Each structure stands twice: as structure tokens, then as C-alpha cells.
Length: 465
Ligand code: SAH
Image (cartoon, rainbow, N blue to C red; front, top):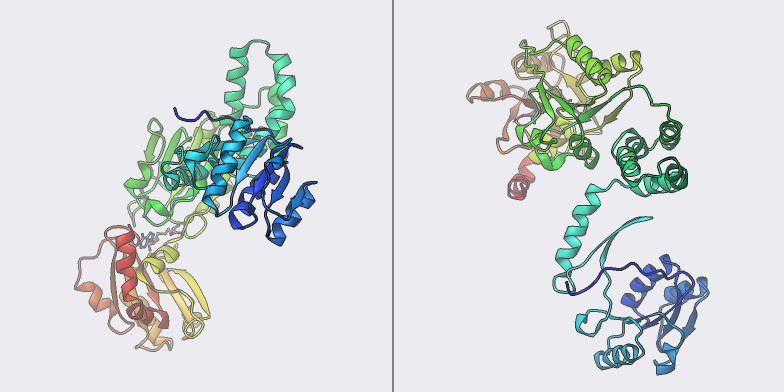
């Protein structure tokens, strides 16, 4: 280990920054966030840096560095573009045993700045010891995605109850189990969902020994249209902590693989006319599992509130008083449009977009056709493959031009994405020439023609995945 990571308390201590440019400013910003008093020395200093130093009871010295500047400081930053000067500062600071950092010169440093994930009071620092700062930054970015933004608030909540819990459990082992449960259970989930008061109430109940009812929770999560990269951070986190996963046919196997390894997986199907489990039984299953105290993940394709029957599922949960969260996902229309290079709206071609189901509850397709004829409206049909010939006919019969561009997108955003384009007059026939595999989405409107202009786009997306 070349460096020992330590966290430096700087509140109200003096730190010398030599240099007045962009880099000095960046370092000074971090130092001020940590409460340091800055002593900034340079013949020329940016106005913003001067203000920053003054705001934190610091000093600004508009002149060259002098060895006497080292007096009384606990840390030195050399951020000038004069390399020999930086070397002198480093040497003089080290002779006085003052930690010194020279920007972009690891050999001259006795301390280095790590890449930071700041969820104060929780802080993660990553370093490569100056060998590969970009790698350290990339790892930091990964960690950023794992740690919910409100993690600091969870630590803050724990702080407020720390002494009380210590008194309650003098035994370290018991205390550890208690806090593990808090940080991985409903208290943490409530904080992450932005429900601070509920989190505090749950923690108080736990402390008071009133074990909350053995009640699980249901996460109704949108898994996006197929490409696992389109999951949200929150979706991924809940996927990795749920005890049971109920998923549909629409959720890609690559996404299910991201769920916790030992979670129970239940396929609840749904294919046109082939319902592995009827909706009311799915609703009932969610309730039963949650009543057993499990954390239940209901993973849905796209967004749970767009043709996802998510509303019905939460009605049932609410009726039984079961806590739940809904996590939005990228709906098929957004995913397919982006990956196929078809903007859903466009200043010149479409001022509105409408999502319509091609498959009605009663099996018919009695859509409000007259509302779908405006040439400045893009229409996206979900579940429209079987009814495609009839959809095109009806749109034309109700007045939409037969020349209106239209596209069918198969398995959008996945490796198997295929786009078939045409017009309302010929799309159905073109589609019939291919062996099309579900799921498919149909986009109708002038915006479809932009795809040709954006043809480079799909290739670019494919290369990116
Ligand atoms: N809740 C989902 C939609 C469920 S309805 C969402 O927000 O996307 C199911 C329909 O969604 C399918 O019949 C198909 O029309 C569409 N769909 C879902 N994923 C798709 C994909 N990857 N490519 C094309 N269409 C898709």
C-alpha cells in the first residue's frame, strides 16, 4: 500500500494554497467545503477564489510565494504552473513535516486528493496513488450509482439514535445486528424513497420494541424496454435486495439476471390470450407474499403505469394496507423511438404524441379514430401487431393520409431490434413479408420519415450496445 487513506479534519484550520488559477480554485472549493480557512498566495488570483477565501475567514496575498507563508498551516497545496516553484514549495513544506499536495505531480506529494463520493457524513474516497486518475474516477462513478443519493440522510438518522441504541444494546454483536437490519430494511427503504418521517417512526418503533407488524413490501418496478442499460439506479438497487421476483414475458432474461442471485423467481407470464396467471391471481400473489413478510419485486416491462396494469396491482395492495413503491421505467415508445432514430415530437412535424393500445379489454379495437387523424400528431400503438392491417385501414378511412409514414419496431432496444418502415397504405403488407417476433410497437406520423435523415443513428446506437 503506497498511501494510507485518512480523512483530514480541516474545520477552522489554515491551509495554504499557492496559485490563483482554475486548478487552485477547484482545490480551494473542496477545502472550503471541508471548512478550511484558506491562505491563497499568487501575484494574480481569480475573483471567485478571492471571494471564496474571504467568505471563509481566509487570507488573500497578491504576491509571490514566500517560505514564511507555511507558518501555521496544516496542509499545503501547490497549484502554480511553475514546476520548479512547485518543487521548492513541496521540499520546504516537507522539511517542516507539513502535508503537501502538488497538483499533477504525484512524486512531489506527501498527500494526494482522492476521487470522492460525497454523501456526507458518509464519504467514499478512491485513489490510484496518482498512477491512473481516470480509472479512479471511473470507479468512483460506479460507486456513485450504487449509493442512493439520500444515503447521507440515513447516516444522519442513525446518528440521532446512536446513543439510545447503544444504551439499549450494550452488547456489540446485538447492536450490529440491529443496525444491519435498519440499514437494509424498511427504515432505509423509507429514507431512499424520500419518506423521512416514516423512516423515523419505523426506527422509533423498532427501538421502543414494538416490533412492526411482520409486513413485507412490494416494489412495482419498470424494467424498461429491454436493454439492461436503460434500468434506473433505483430499479437495480431494489432488484438486488428483493426476496422474491415476479416477472412477465416482456422482461428480458439479461435483466432478470441482475436480480439478487438467491431471490425466488416466479414467472407470471402474459402473452396475448395465454395468461400464465390471470391478473387477479397476480394481485393476490403479491398480497400473500408481502403478508409473509417478504420484499416482493414486481418487475414489469417498460413503465409500470403505461399499459402495465400497475394501477390495478397497487389498488389491491392499498386495500390490504401493504406498503409499496412504484419505480418508473423507460416505456417502449421512448426506448424504441430513441433506438430507431424517430423523434416522437418535432417542431416542424408533430406537436403532440399519443400512446394508444391496439388491443382493447373486450378484444375489439374500437379506438377513438376521429381523434387520431391530425397530421401533426404522432401515434404510438402498443400491442398493435395483430390488429395492424385494421389499424391502418381505419386511420385512412377516418381521414389520415394513406401516405403517412409508419414504422413497426420489433424487440426495440435489444440486439434483435428490427425496424420495418412504410406508409399507412403499405406497412401491413411489408410486415407480412417478414417473420416478425413480439414485442412490437407501431409508430405512425410524419416524424417516421426523419429516420432516414438520422440513419447514422441506429448504427451508432448498435455500436454503443
Ligand atoms: N408497460 C409497458 C407496456 C406493456 S404493454 C411499457 O411501458 O413499455 C406490452 C406492449 O408494449 C407490447 O405489446 C409492445 O407493443 C410494447 N413493447 C414493450 N416492449 C417493447 C419492445 N422492446 N419493443 C417493441 N415493443 C415493445
